[in-house]
Each structure stands twice: as C-alpha cells, then as structure tokens.
Image 1 (cartoon, rainbow, N blue to C red):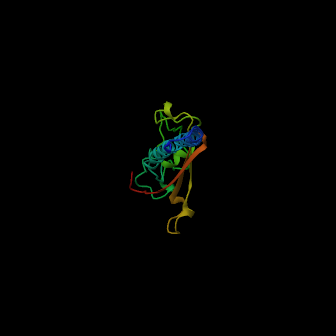
Image 2 (image 1 turned 180 degrees about the vertical axis):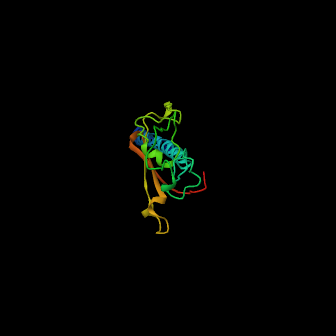
Image 3 (image 1 turned 45 degrees about the horizontal axis):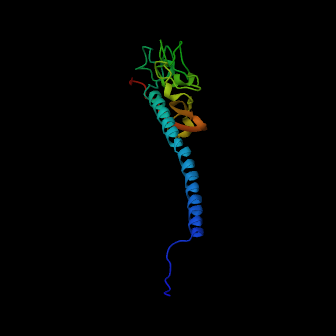
Length: 184
C-alpha cells in the first residue's frame, strides 16, 4: 500500500473560513453605511458657507456713509450733523432688501428679518434647493474691536449666521469702515 497524503481543505475548515469572511464583510458594510451617512455633512456645510458668503458680500458692497445715500450731502458731509438724513443703524423710509425701495447702506441690513426655513434671493424668490436653511444678519458698532485710532462709530461688525439641515451652523464676521466724505 502506498501512503499518499491528501491535500485540500476539510469541510470544517471551509465553513469556518466562510463564517470569518461573512463577519468581515458585515463589518465593512456597517462602516460603509456610516461613511455614506456622514458624507452629506460636507455638502450641507459647503452650501451654508456659500449662502453666508453671498449674503456677506451683498452687505459689504453697500456704502457706509454719514448720510443716507439718497441725501444730497452724502458726498460732502464730514459728520452726521452735515446731513439732511443721517444714516443710522436700521432701515430708513421703508427700505427693504427686496424693494421697491432697496437697502442702500450697510447699516440698513440690521433691519433684515431672519430668513427661517428657506433662503430668498434679492428678488424675494425662495431658492427651492435651500429649503431647510436659515440665515440671520446682525450689525453692530465695532469701534472697540480696533485700535483707538478708529473711533467707535466709524466701524461696523457684520455677523452672518446660516444654519443648515442637522443644525450645521456657519458664522461669518466681517467689518466695514466708514469712508465718507467724498466717496460714494
């Protein structure tokens, strides 16, 4: 009789291999599920940053003068005393972001009501892809944020807060310094 050694796997070894492989694949499936759930967060955050940036840019592009931009002395007034309509924090004369009389100065945006649950563009049209997002603007005097060389009433701090789905929150802060007289 010749003794030959048999090679291969027994049935028990094969079953153990299949069980171990199944446990590993199940673990990877759970990990993959967690990663795909979390992958939406960067998109929501990126969208919130885009909304906040856009709103901040819109506000910072407005003038910050002693007089309301509709005042004839807007280019010559060296203080609020030289204005027929001094610019204060908040909107004057029925101005709104959406018209018919538009915000025409940075400080007017302090009167912007919060956009809750949806974001509106400059024409007051709700952007359907941004339902679930909210935006809020706060404008305050920021003189204490700068060296003493800048008087307290010569700077505004603009804070834009955007909240997205799953309470993702983005806060942007910017400053606007007064550049009057003789500047539009």
